[in-house]
Length: 116
View (cartoon, rainbow, N blue to C red):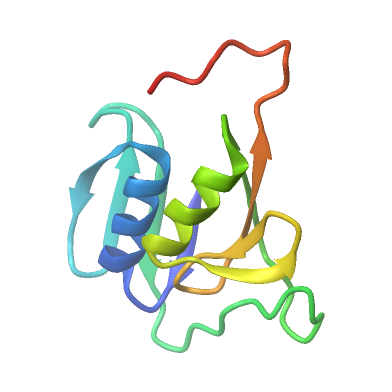
């Protein structure tokens, strides 16, 4: 998966922190976050005229969104705001620094605990 953005390095740093994964490739125009250098992950590519989503306003569609599973929504909310997300005035819905929406979802009881 590749996300268009105006600053790939900054957005990769955000998702590296959010997902607990390393930056495994880094150039001025293309940065990858993944478990290791041989695993597919999330890539970020520079687009000069990037227009971020305006969701929930349909003027610019959300384009893509992540659901990020967490143990504690309140702690995760504080953390994502600290690393640069902004709230989209929806329950547990945020925008990354380039405007892409993502949701924090509580780990369901049937899923294994998320490693610390």
